[in-house]
Length: 346
Image (cartoon, rainbow, N blue to C red; front, side, top):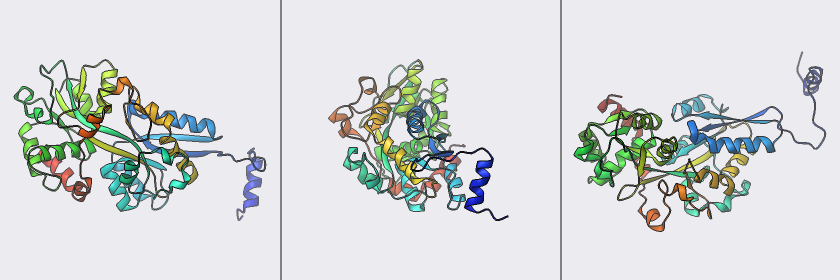
């Protein structure tokens, strides 16, 4: 039998389903699937998910933790019907996502909170997604293993830390940022990374496959010093572990993260509602506070006192932030991952 709209409705009613009264909008059995972070850093997303579920009847928001670009392969393989609706991307993969077309151009007119965002951050978005937060790459150390705390990027090569330095795989923004900073400090640039490769080899480092694994190695005392996200260091310290974070001279690396609608998302209105929540003052204040310490992208949010060891809180600290020309890095990213795995036996 051909299933028409009328026969479908009758069959649903026979099965015990109910229909909403005329004029009532329900999100019955709707699911919004959002790529998120792992562990405690997922909690701000969970807060926003709970808020949306309380406001939209029948909605379930499912968070899928992932630090891997494997998720991108799934999105591309879906061929127009994505299993996911939204995703966060740091600056380098955000550029790739724009180029490859698996995130959608943003219509700012659909956002109530668009004017909240710092204008310079909109410029960096390329018109795709909302500027969600920023994180810092600095130096973290286990104070039970280190007598003299590092104060600069060059301190990674101090004899005191020989054999105890960890670095992250270049499949992550953490690893790419570390390589770029090593190159720039020692006479290279984003388009000339050879000095960075040479100096990282000098370290004879312990390599971690992901930022979370690198953080665990630091917590367990398998390494003493490592370039690390400020958020991961803060979470470890909040657990009572002997982990300290340093914003090293000449400055930590700031990397913006964007939240974008994925091409083929099932409900664009819900996706925009999520993105609008991300740039709300309420969400940003929560994400900036303990123990997450995400940098805020909207105007008028004060840096909490507890966040100041992990986030720039003065004009001088903001001015010292280092940036990376990711357009150069993105061109050769696959080669950088392959080379890292070969040279550091990942």
